[in-house]
Length: 110
Image (cartoon, rainbow, N blue to C red; front, side, top):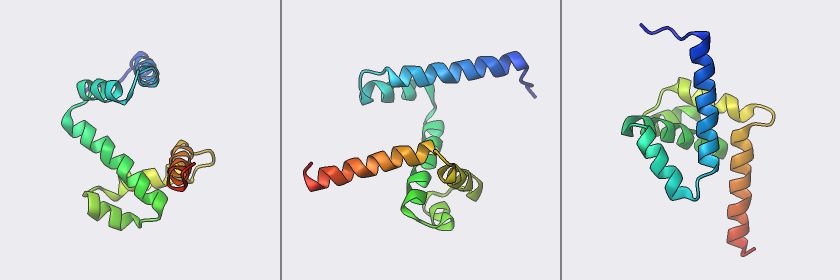
């Protein structure tokens, strides 16, 4: 069993921040997709994609058990997304609100 040292934790945190910076600096969606495809296995991509699907379903009001069945996910992962959505200043909620208002503007022709 590998134990993470304090230095490992710092290195992981720095690496995560670097990944966020890389993604924010990608020239376009295609470049970001290519980077993530190189970085993650198909199973890892499927896992975080399902997590995002579950968050979007929660945002729409879909019950957790229905989401678990629909995407073959554990309730623990879905509950985590639910808790994050309920937090004050939730990044999930900010992004989904922005997407929602952008889609509403597109439909109205703005």
